[in-house]
Image (tube, each protein chain N blue to C red):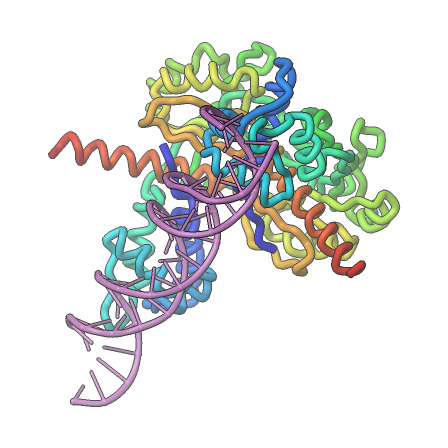
Length: 214
Length: 214
DNA sequence: TAGATTGTTAATCGATTAACAATC
DNA sequence: TAGATTGTTAATCGATTAACAATC
C-alpha cells in the first residue's frame, strides 16, 4: 500500500498548532493563519480540509473546536491504539521503555522476542516469546506492530505478524517487506537516514570548496 | 537546507543491487536490468546517473565496477565517517550499542549526555559529559551528530552542536530545529511514523467497512 | 451593502517516464 | 551494417499554488 505521508504529517502539525491556539483562548482560525503557523499556503490548508469533508464558514474561518474534533478522528486519536513491539534488541527495548507515546493515545502493550532469555512477563511492559504472538494479538485484537528484528529475520517475522492479523507494521529492518495489499507497511531506514546526512554534508562541502576556489 | 531524500535512497539501492551482481561475477549492467531490480524505470536510472556525471557505453551498458566506484564516492563510502550521539537515553543508547553501521563506513565514536550518571569513559563507545562536546568535536574533526535528547532540550543542544562546528544532524526530537543554512538537518519523527501507520490502518478499515456495506 | 474568506477550478511546478535521435 | 542501448528532450503525472466566483 502506498501512503501519502505528507498529508498526514501536515494534519499532525495542524493539530499541534490548533491545540496551542485553543490554549490561548482562541475559538476560530483562518486558513492563512494556520498555514503560516505550519509553513504551508492557505490554499493547501483549505484543500486538505475540504478533501476530508471539513468545511468552514465563508466569512468566519474555521471553528478550532470543530477542526480538532475532526483531526482527532482522522488521526485516530479518538481511541487508544495498542501496539506490540516484535524484536527486543537495542531499538525494540528503547521503544518499549519510551513513555512519551502514551499521551498521544499510543500504548505499547507487549514485546516479543525469539530469545527465551529476553522473555520477562513481570516487566512494566511484558516481553513474551515470539510463539505467543499469534495468541496475544488475537486475544487482545492488536492491529499495529513494530518490527525491530535483524534484517535476515525480518521477512519471516513479518509473515508471522501478518498471519496473526496485524494490519499495520512500522518496520525498522533495512529491507523492503512483502505483505498483502491490505497490510500497511511503513519503513524507517535509520542507516539510510544517517547516510542521507552524510551525503548532503559531503555535497555541501564540495560545493563550498568549488565556490571558494572559483 | 532542503534535501532530496528520494534520489539518495535510490543510489543506496543501486549500490546494494550492484554489489550483489558483482558478487555473481557480472561486470556490466544495463539500465533496464538495474531499474527492474530496484523497482524504477530505466529512464530514471539513466537520468540519475547522467545528472551525476556517470556515463555508460551506448551499446554495452554500464561497467559495474565504474558505477560502484562512483557510488562509493557519491555516498561518501570512500572514507570512514565518525559520528557522535548526543543524548544517551533509551534511543541514544540503542544507537551507540548497535554495531551494524560499522560495515557501511559509519563509526559511532562517542556519546554525550548532560547527566553525569551516564558518563562512562570505559565503555566500548565512551560517553562524555555534554560540556566536553565542543572540545571533542574540534579535536576529532567530527562533522556528523545524532541528536536524541528530549524535545524540550533539543533546540539548545542543537545550538551547542552547531557551535561546535558539526555540519550534519540526524534529529530524533519531535520539533523542527532551526539551524544555519549550511548545516544539514534530517529529522526522523518516530511518533509521526507510528501515527502514519495508525492513520492508514484506520483509513483502510473505514474503506473496507464502506465497501462491505455498499 | 461592502468586505473578507471559503471552496474549487485552472495554472504552475517538480519529478518521473516515454520516446527517440545519436552512436557504439 | 543492423541492432541495441545510452543520453536527453518532450510528455505525463501528481502535488502544490494562484486566482476567483460563491457567499456569509
